[in-house]
Amino acid sequence: MASVLDGVNQRTQLVGYNRLELLLFRLGGKQRFGINVFKVREVIQCPLLTRLPGSHSVVRGIANIRGRTIPVVDLGVAVGKQPLANINSCYVIITEYNRITQGFLVSEVDRIVNMNWEEIHPPPKGSGRGTSYLTAVTQVDKELVEIIDVEKVLAEVTHPNEEVSQSIASECAITPKAMCEVLVVDDSSVARRQIQRTLEQVGVTPLMACNGREALNMLRDLAVDGKQSIKERIAIVISDIEMPEMDGYTLTTEIRRDPALKDLYVLLHTSLSGVFNQSMVKKVGADHFIAKFSPDELAKAVLDRVKG
Figure 1 (cartoon, rainbow, N blue to C red):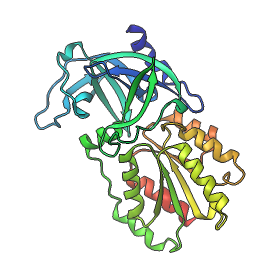
Figure 2 (cartoon, helix red, strand yellow):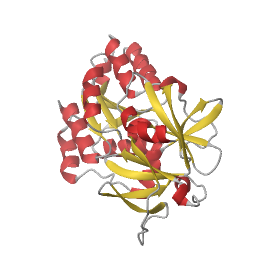
Figure 3 (cartoon, one colour):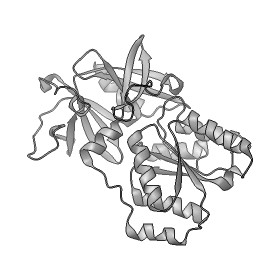
């Protein structure tokens, strides 16, 4: 266990095209779950938690960690399981999602595994994808590992603002009527809904794809169609980075390699944040990077590009 806890911070600095490292954990049963190590800041034994009156039912309390007050979410309760018992023996995974730091209470931390995004698959049909908290699945040691849609969990806890400010929305009045479309690529149903709502508020028509491979196939089909230049039709490709089968970095690289697609404008939009991602944006040839989720920032970037 010590090697897992000690190694997380160093492993978050690793990256490879279409590769990821999963931190495996349990929520009180045998089923293993995974979270991308890039979003993990550290793993600690559960500290003393202070319960706040009126807090969300999935928040077990707040903790003071390295001088910061951080909410700790019982991840099991958040996805419909029983509350974790004896939390003194549990662990807290400190993560950063969508510009916010929070802790996830888990019963056990297993280990870190290095994988390829091609080994990560969308949930099987019939799994209730639209309503469940499952965003992807994979296999480790011949056992199913479930990857939770953490963005959905946090959206239900924090209720992020999804409204574009009036000053930004009013800019759509001076954008061209014959507007190009925007391709949105994200494996999280919540993230797709948030982005779609943002775009619709400024009069932009979104196309949707659930992962990089689906998006790449869609773009190539549109390019072959030939009725309209792909660059004239698709004003922006807005892509998440973490996605099953093909991540956003690889999608961007493939777009730049394809003569028919290479001039498309690519905006990487992800809950991963920091200087690390800015350097990767340049490395793979993306045009812009925005950390999730600011409706105004995203809408402004889209409007500036469409008008330009």
